[in-house]
Image (cartoon, rainbow over all chains, first blue to last red):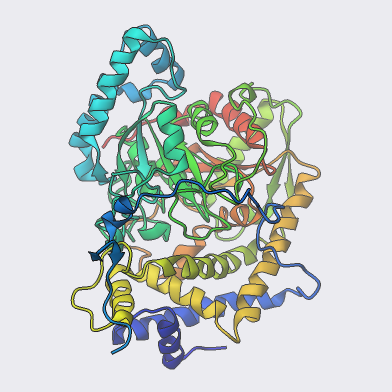
Length: 95
Length: 485
């Protein structure tokens, strides 16, 4: 499996990255090299192997549905790029 | 001689007996930083005013109270992906260059409760992605043993700061070797705990199924003290393990008689520098002399670990780093046309090359049509890698090998070759995938650069790992060697 510059453009779009031409070329080359290396995994028969998503044997971690103190809004806005009337401001979603 | 060459226990006693003041320890830190950090470049942000105030308070306290935290007055350096309330936390990324956290990570709360003093925030590879510190978007950190060499990564700043006596101890984080490999390159002691032992709450997530915070110190005993402080269940981390925390200090008996050590042939084979291999074989002789027994074992899936890791870690990263969108915090692009533009431009301007590369790799692995071939396949191979260890641990108490295949490499020598860079983690990655604990301790020098021995244990058996590391350290002098910066 080899990936083209078109694939890279598609993935960049999914990842919300705006790549320049140089980056597109470089990533196409480098991702191909890394994925080619990853092909190595196909040497192994894993048909009857369970995937490991997590090393601990944890199932659902629940807590009582009780209200707890949350972060004060004033503090939350300290890092917001733009704030207005207790809300975070962003450019219009629809033109 | 630096005050920081004393053992924690001795410093503690000196403070209690009023032969030493906390403010002197803090002075020592900032004086040393002033003296050497222009060469080492381990720090991103200093918290001098607060540190001096805290030191004065602790000195005052010493007059009235006999209560002492486990890390009383000790100057700490904190990797910059651990959030610290009110103290800039950047993950060495331009994206977070203006970010001041509004709460403390659980480990920070624990350090404060143990009364250590935060000296500042420490450099790293951006978002912990890298093995050389050259991916910091601010400046690279240099290896104190030879400033033309990398300190390793991603916790390279933490290891370098401890090695250069800029702090007494440091916290790092390890996803595929990011505590152990820099500890090896810088000749200090670095422990990656079992996954789930230390709370990840407040650790900026890179790969959530792998990330662990751990201590970097000058000796094993001090490492046990810091681990004792930060380990433990935390309701704020849903992957935190609810296990009893043993007394790690009492594990340091020096007794390894009859201990069974497995030495994976894959860790001493192809790609391992013969000088590094020799140091490990010499170290095994020392342990043999102490009554331990070692045999060659096999971890047959080792050669698949790096590929498995880069698919899984990058996939998790691509998902975790989706939160950096320029909306709620971080640096937002100037004059965006619309909301989509905020995302695209803020991310593209804010992330460096390695971070983008991993987001791309992860997004590709998770994307429709490729999920089974890459992500799921890697998760299945992860099972095989874990089973390799399970099998060896049926018969052996610990597994020992090198921490890294070589000593530190020259700055600039691998930065344009991601795959070669990734292969430096060949001995640490399998351990991370299995979620088990491992420590790196100094075990030799090759051409003036330190070599690290990796001691790997069963899940939640940090005690065994520390005991073996301590017994070895007590019989050798490598950990007492100091770099001339």
